[in-house]
Image 1 (tube, one colour):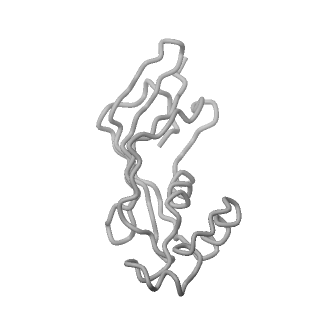
Image 2: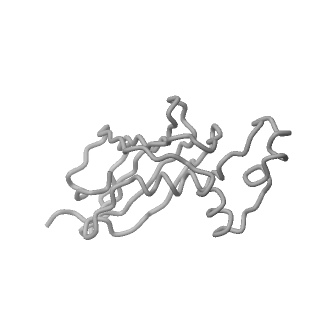
Length: 144
């Protein structure tokens, strides 16, 4: 999504990523990296006793995997500017395949050769259910 200059975007523009399947290895590796070994994510027997009936992926893992599906063009992207209104609205299970759908909601010219593109980000799984919603903000260069 963020592979063109700020002045090339229009409010209402949409984009969809390719898919990526969340695996058990993803969950174990994320738990190791983050130190988040909460049993809902890592203990099969514990998870069976929850309303989810099985292990779920860490919300931050899903968000991180989703960011890996985005296009970030060097020289165009200046910096990650932030995320607003982040919500984890449905669980993502081992074996679910996620993709990202984005819609540009705002363009803010910074007046210094850059601008912030705000986009509503929905991470969806193969069932069509939205699992994560947020507004992502990226600082981009303007084309010279």
